[in-house]
Length: 315
Image (cartoon, rainbow, N blue to C red; front, side, top):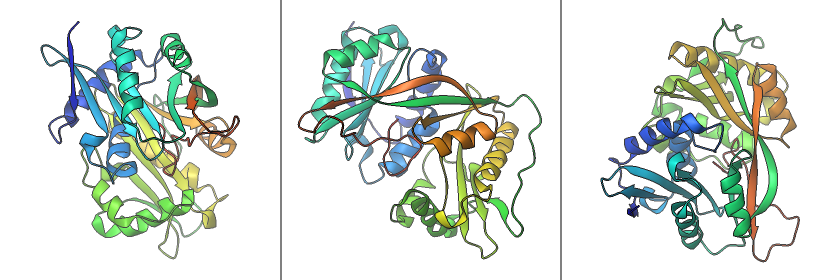
């Protein structure tokens, strides 16, 4: 098979990437594929300081049909290798892995997330020096029944992020939830990204009008699968049921938009997050493993990791 590789071109390639992900996610039980919401969140917020062409590289056949792409996380040493199921286990997969390793900055580790059912990817990574470095859960909730009404403490309300005027408050609660500095300009930029739907950017508002908690929802209209990424509560407002409230409101809205089920990928070690998703009806479907390749790091020092955390991204 003849293939060519080239950098991403914005904006014309974005709908091609999302169409590709909608197509290949039919094989998501066997291999780790990004949700279309992951793509928007990672490219236009998590990695918003980078040019898209420096993050995404595309492989095509002679007829310019997409075979796969690599998404890099330069600041962290991470990457996502998204390959059409027909080409898994072949030379193209090795070529894409080697490309990712060459184009990441020279730091002490490389890492990527892998479905534990994907023995082909696991074998390839192990052959290139990667070792398991943490477990993740793929959890899912079906939307085939009526949903409970969100329960809120007195004086709290739920609403969408309305417009650019909300960007500073939204960035503040995002940073507070994950112990990071707020980035209002970054969030304002993200709100105009392809795929962002303000009606699915849900916040719990405290009586003093501070944003207290949030859930960012996404929908793939082709597969009718929704996703939450990210979800969080500011430290001052924890243990009041706000996480459940924003999730139930998000589930309700995703159901109205046509979602038939909703997924989250959550780190197994994050017990509070695992319990939160279980409390609103999410069930584990399978596990994923973070595979890390270290050069000079001492054994037992973990690479940056987290899909559910906007400070340390992993696909």
